[in-house]
Image 1 (cartoon, rainbow, N blue to C red):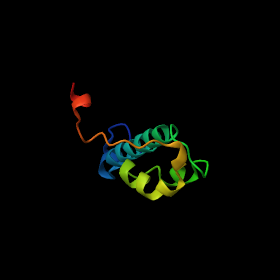
Image 2: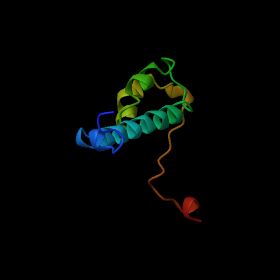
Image 3: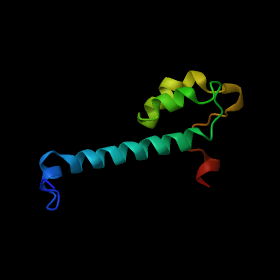
Image 4: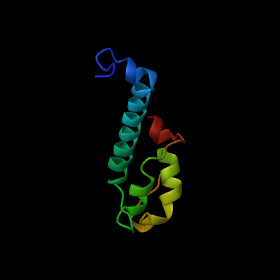
Length: 86
């Protein structure tokens, strides 16, 4: 069994940290794909699938060209107006 009962083998090789990092990466990919699925893409989402492992801001910058701009309404939520704060 090579020390697997005590868990030392994977700890020494960094298996625990690597496994945790892979889970986080998979969570990022799934989250990005779900978020992107709500948007219209001219390439059928191919760019998003290729860039899904990147942070959302990078994904959007790299795939912005593939958005169906005529079907998306952009709004700036960072500014506050009297209507938004009421």
